[in-house]
Length: 295
Ligand SMILES: NC(=O)C1=CN([C@@H]2O[C@H](COP(=O)(O)OP(=O)(O)OC[C@H]3O[C@@H](n4cnc5c(N)ncnc54)[C@H](OP(=O)(O)O)[C@@H]3O)[C@@H](O)[C@H]2O)C=CC1
Ligand SMILES: Cc1cn([C@H]2C[C@H](O)[C@@H](COP(=O)(O)OP(=O)(O)O[C@H]3O[C@@H](C)C(=O)[C@@H](O)[C@H]3O)O2)c(=O)[nH]c1=O
Ligand SMILES: [Mg+2]
Image (cartoon, rainbow, N blue to C red; front, side, top):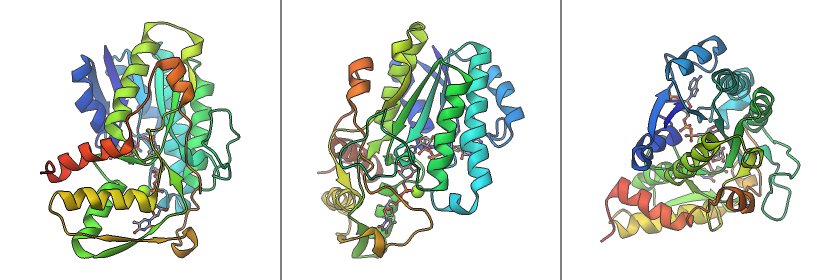
């Protein structure tokens, strides 16, 4: 099986390139300059040239704060661009697995979000990703939309690498403790994406399609996530760094973020048999890669 994935250096595309061969799947990144999601005319041609059996739509405009001042570009990439990817899949007669986000919710629910809970994004990024989900669904019924959250990995830009960088020059960092969610390993996401892609490819079973939440086991807030990162870094000989838990109000940002980002994973477990590991275990794997194994 051959999977074309949008993007080149992103966390999920990098993880798919690594994990695909372990599952006997060829993974072909398709991205700039051959394919620019902001230029829909480049999308169909580049994806057709990859001759995929399945398309994974993993590229996105992911700069949450910057999106507030670039709404047109965020929308072009995350909504129009995602729709163009799904239209290309439809034209090629192949399924599309599209990545979306917890930021489609406003976080006002007191328990984990289910797939049928009402959406209400708080910012431009979430709004553009929600429009992307709708564009994908409108372009082809042959889709699975996987909503994930708080992605970390040894690759690219993410909260783990930001915390490790800050700990090089600081003894204490102030981190919001009133946003709950599930830190999710891009490598775990890649394995789940490949499972779903394989199952969609196997046949046109409607039940396997639609929206799925893909959370890790375990819960966190950004401050407890940072504490776990520093504990793991400390075990690996790095400078100790303390976390000062603060509130969202103490940390003003251009974009509002949901107070509750927790996703409920029952549907993907029941329909695709997928349950991700505890994020604390996946964090250890990530830190082994970034800092070397703990003694
Ligand atoms: N990061 C996170 O915490 C979360 C991400 N998601 C979603 O998961 C998916 C994967 O995210 P992640 O791997 O972290 O993304 P990254 O931010 O690591 O990478 C973004 C990717 O998108 C590509 N891209 C951006 N703009 C364009 C464009 N105009 N044309 C073509 N490619 C473009 C980048 O290309 P290039 O390689 O050329 O730079 C890069 O490969 C995205 O859909 C994202 O919305 C959902 C929840 C959490
Ligand atoms: C760097 C830093 C961040 N924070 C806060 C800000 C924010 O609430 C939280 C996380 O910061 P980030 O900038 O990593 O968060 P953010 O970029 O909003 O992460 C989001 O990215 C998009 C793409 C998604 O889809 C989401 O699931 C989520 O992962 O930590 C602090 O409190 N102190 C700090 O020193
Ligand atoms: Mg960010």
